[in-house]
Length: 383
Image (cartoon, rainbow, N blue to C red; front, side, top):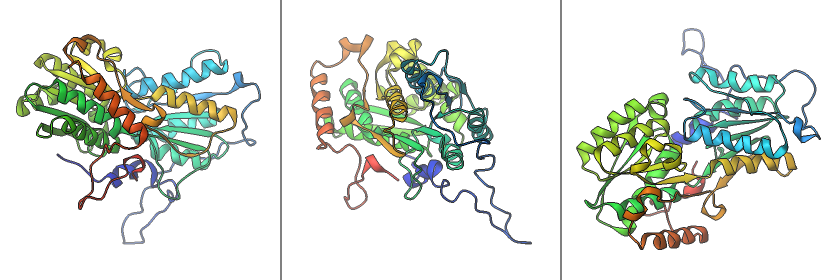
């Protein structure tokens, strides 16, 4: 299993917020370090405050790579913002912007700031650096970063809410389902990219959940790429070919995908192979109907709920910047219904899942692996 350090994964979205503008190099020495916050600037005009007429509040969404209707992370983040806007009485659709490349991230967010928006929601941990940079430059504008927390020590900003999720808990439940459904006692998981801390936590929990029911079950894992975010999360063609090869090489009969839209292609490979698939982030039996016939469940983050909740908190004056962590205790993670495959699920599985989820809520079930030497890892607050 190829895994980069979890510290590196967290660094992607948080470390530059405090010391983003440092440069280096002298004549004849190393080249200056590029400024990761280039393009982030304070908006012109007076200090911005939320309108007392909530219908006049302007909310914008900056998605991750791909499309807003990706049937996954972008779409459900956007749905949460739109839900909040509807509740606030804001007419029309919430505007959104999608990056064609990493170079677009700061300009996309900055455009919302310059156009007078009050609340800006950005999707995905890869947007973390850009969001932090623009938030630091504009302390009178609110930002919500989905999958962008917790912040590094000292990197908290009072106007930047960083949503984090206990992916290992949702993955653990998915692993229990996989072990129960597997007839060959051979299951697998494919992540999008090795730089993705949430992907790693999903898969760590998945393996532990499976082995809680079948200690000797084989769990094969791999990642689509080590460096290409587009290939990792927005390339279903690559996902399908990678998934087909993985299934052939490993002989699994249940496969968990943690790769966004690329994972939709992995689920296509699952269906063609006649095995069972498990989706991620949202209920993919509903969001991706073509593969519903082979998708038994999905490991869910309550994306829409968490985004809408935090927008309401901002408007209500109770919001605080920093990490907003969603776990089983807050019903912030979970698993999807079995839908078309319910008749194939062992009759005692739902009770086992309910028992595990209750233990997660109580804080008595360990859903992530130990460090070397047996010291526990605090999965909920990984840095």
